[in-house]
Amino acid sequence: MDQKLRIGIIGCGGIANGKHMPSLAKLPNVEMVAFCDIIPSRAEEAASEYGVKDARVYEDYRTLFEEESLDVVHICTPNSSHAEITIASLEAGCHVMCEKPMAKSASEAREMVAAAERTGKKLTIGYQSRFRSDSEYLKEVCERGDLGEIYLAKARAIRRRAVPTWGVFLDEEKQGGGPLIDIGTHALDLTLWMMDNYLPKYVVGSVFHKLNKRKNAANAWGSWDPEKFQVEDSAFGFIVMENGATIILESSWALNTLFEGEARTILHGTEGGADMEDGLRINGEEFGKLYTKKPALGTTGVAFYAGETETDADREARLWIESIVENTPPRVLPEQAATVTEILEAIYRSARQGEPVYFKNGRILGE
Image 1 (cartoon, rainbow, N blue to C red):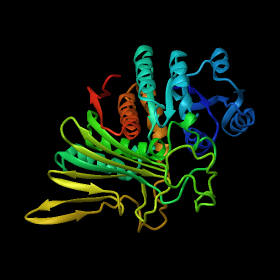
Image 2: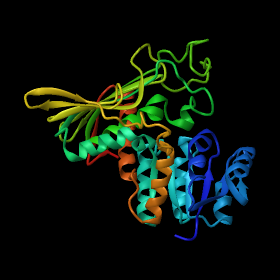
Image 3: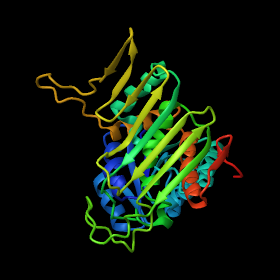
Image 4: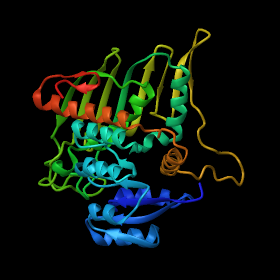
């Protein structure tokens, strides 16, 4: 492809600067030509660092689409605006990478899928954990059938004290929730992907506000403001799939525990198991004996070789752009991401109602 893809960045805050823009800047077949943020100075700084010489800056994404002709849009805004901006971007003729979670609600996620189907444009969601070397290796193990039928799994996203105190993370209206929708979403996506199972039957959820009103609390990023901490501090789900497979989802920003770990999955199958508790470990039985295998996923012991330089975020960006250029499906399909959002919403609903939430054909019953 001789002509570079023209990319617009909507939302120039932390995730755009920490992940999207640095990785896109390494690709030779793209150029970032437009930057949009409700805080103009952030868009100006992004344009100065990552944009082409004549990159333009916008405060309103609607104006951007009126004045620009783009091929791709990366959406890095608060969760409450994901659906609105994604649908507008698709209808403007752009392929869309939207940050996780897909949307604040299941209905919005379904609208996004419908918009992608209607416009014929590609839509993917920023679940970068799928692009880690351990995740890619484990996915091949699962696809080859080494674990057999995976009938029990645990999705873990546990922080002892790491509440994000900046931006809108603690704002329930803008985010839709706390650790469940922020980091639990990664663990659930990873687990469903490994199982290749997207048909939930029912969900039971528990959501806790036990530590979020504490003053002067210990926290990785400094004490939070109890008045602003509107979302849960931890949430848990028990998910039963149509085929009987069961997933236990654990998520927390603040929990009295020594068992920490984010975006991890533990899988139990009829032929073997796997976990990410001490690096990637595969376990099973062979020749009447039990075994544990720990793949060497890094590159060590070779003089003068520093190892792989492509980060997970770089790989995510590269494969996303390749899917557009080569017209192949992106690794993260919108239908898969929508199922993640359906399950997260069901956990929140179940906790509020005090009873299980049921599904039909992958959707919350009655939706």
